[in-house]
Length: 396
Image (cartoon, rainbow, N blue to C red; front, side, top):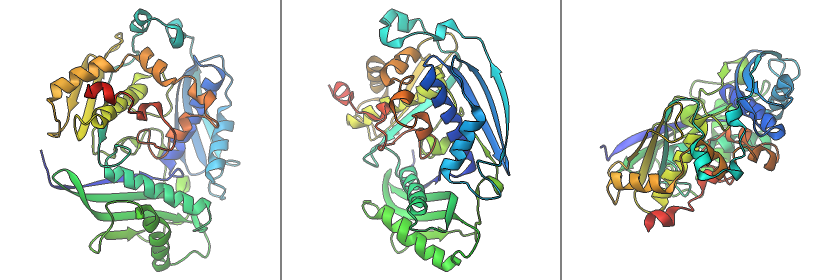
């Protein structure tokens, strides 16, 4: 196991084409569940210059206007240029309505333990959850900082601190580690798209980004850039307009950004665009919940939990724990504690996290909010899988 290394993670703003697709897909999920909590839906999008394609299959009593939702999301993100906007872009749909599966129409809040045990998963997948003590959010520092930079880039645009910015942007942070602990910031990259017109030259843009974005993000961070940190702003030259008019987007193409910035493993399955009966989505949240509580309990500095599910079974067929040499007790003992104290059954996860009901409870929907800046480590949303309420049980 390497102790000294450099690791880099990236993030993107909500106007990035892939994230645009994720947000539309999850807004569709929200609209289904707001009307019918037993809705089954999988929605995927692809976007390019002046055109958006939505493919969805669903079983529900809800009525959902797919093009309207897509246009609403596009406009809310702020795309209003001639090249791409919510009013004039072409929207194609391929929709397939399926018959309801009676096995999915259960009220998990009223179920007994034996009834929860009787609800099997409908797909097979291996998923991962991770936590570490680099940050207060128990997230790896590279992806944590990359998300902060991306969010600040968006804030600088919306608050008109840098009014010439457009919606699309990318960030990247490289962190040097010593003895598996963050030691210094090796490099920072910010790719900021600009509106057409009289924007600043590259020298002014670099100065503006350093002052309004980078300095703001690192103001309260323990590990800061130093004199040797390499900082790049639009190193390939001006990036005008950005978004779908420049490069295409697809739902589920940013799994590393959605999770741990590849500091830990993640499933190959997309998280966005799926209702809570998809174990490849909600199982990832349950695995994160368990890993975070392990680290919060002080059992390890880093913890990765792997869950493997097979079709027709309610429980994972295997639960693996890896603490990368940071565990204070053996990994197999931590695995036993995790299996004893956490419910990884599909109906149990839905019940504990209220995953069918949150879109109606949270103003403006729930799942769409997860589609940008990470499904895990979000301290701004009060996510149920970010609680550390079982750390005391693991310590005991």
